[in-house]
Image 1 (spheres, helix red, strand yellow):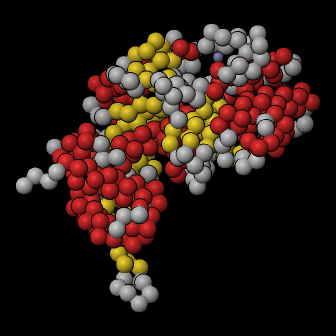
Image 2 (cartoon, helix red, strand yellow):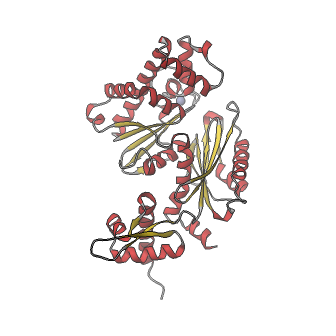
Image 3 (spheres, rainbow, N blue to C red):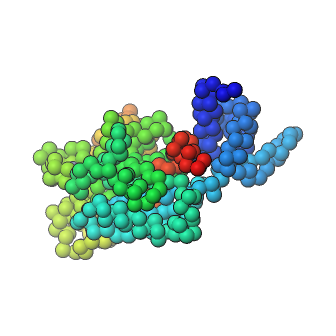
Length: 404
Ligand SMILES: [Zn+2]
């Protein structure tokens, strides 16, 4: 007799919580799993047996227990399938291959022409990168569970997935469909800052806290907001466009069409504009990242204009962060993105002081500011987490794929 539907759903929910507990905190014994998931030992045994049979889990060893039988240790099977994480950046495309336990197996990075952003060029660059990683040679295509892509635009999930990047002149376009056609693999897309926030919250600098903001500061500026352990998305998944909050009325023109946005002061091009205003541009190379590194060096050497530049930047960033603190009351803020990490390295004390000066004492009280854990890999790891999320939720699309 067919079991009632409610039973099937409950089994699915139990499998999800066990798989998630092992992926985020494994390896562990069935007894620990029972304590962690609040499921009965009998349910844990039944569900883990199913997952072992499916090949999603492995028995990795035994641990002695006081006065009892030795306990088997379980973990996610890293070779069950592989994840691809793509960081589609404003100046580069980076792709990384991970096994199911998130061990990085291979990586490839291509520089893109930053002045021109044609969607087809990015799709081709990703297809080429996937080929370079040996997919179809060292790893079978059928073993790839999915390709996660972090993009700098706004990704709408209501209806067909579309990506809008007004700063690139990208009107909402079906990037997911374009990539699935080019790669012939399942693709999951989200905003890069949101993907990065997932990676840092699950496995990085945000572990152990439920309310967290992860900042992505590079050419553009964005935020991934985690409240009660889950991503805050807003009505159309565009929450976190923190770079376009207003800091100066009638301030610098922004590429979003408005003026005075935070991004125009604390994004890398904004900081270079301030550097030019302070008379520092003659000393700088043309390349944005190289120019930024030169400014950091001048600051560390004690050049007065560079000190004024970063003092001003710390104040602007501190004010922008204080707005986030007053709105979301996070326990932790994580500074990421290539420029964000550099700013964190040289200015963490000044930035923290400015946040303290501009936010409400009560909102600031639990706050700790850190630099991100995954560094340059953060968006790739986050993008792979978009696929992992589907695996952990035993998404029917994914399970059907396995059953084929
Ligand atoms: Zn703007």
